[in-house]
Length: 281
Image 1 (cartoon, rainbow, N blue to C red):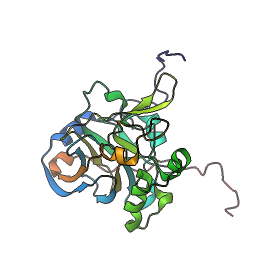
Image 2 (cartoon, one colour):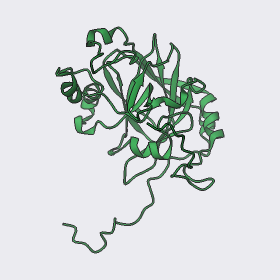
Image 3 (cartoon, rainbow, N blue to C red):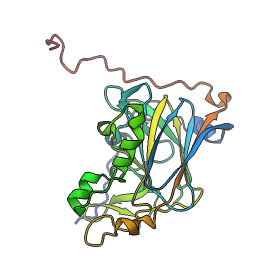
């Protein structure tokens, strides 16, 4: 398989000052601004929880006592049809997320739901393949297909249970950001996962650009240091030894740090996808 490095520029670019040209100084100030803790919880292993985040707040996801991957979903709190769009985010940002990258929402809205403001692993040697956007959540369907076993603590299941109190269902769970996950494409262009490098205190923070409903799952594979499927797969009990909780904190930010900020507006496209004059039925 070719190991050629491609030097072509990014396909999706904006003009200076455009929507992809983030005001880094603003988000740097936010990351260090005076903040007040408004909500926190510790997410146990192999579980999920949903929570609300007011626009203008900062969310911190932190490793507690060992390496652990977390699968994150995100919706507009007031319109659940608008949710995080991992595929478009990969195109507009990168195949993994880091500081200043934005969580873009689905059509027809297409706006930043949140922006990454801090990442303690930004200087890690493998930072380019941490906080993975290439893969998605593990789920009981692929587990039944590959392992011939039913197991209800996959991230898809954890997220499904977490959002149930908000009137959402399995159909609302979507492709995730794999927070702290070490993953990419190997020399054969096959998707791989490797041991999560987080240590206690490592964290990932994002700024809510709109009112959000977030949901997080502590992956049943834990730090992903053992295989979940295939001939070398560890049992779910063995995987359990590599699982740790995650802490979530929500902070309000000093109003002075938000001076000049406003919530991003939905996409301004005014057409009807070529349906002008067509019968609405």
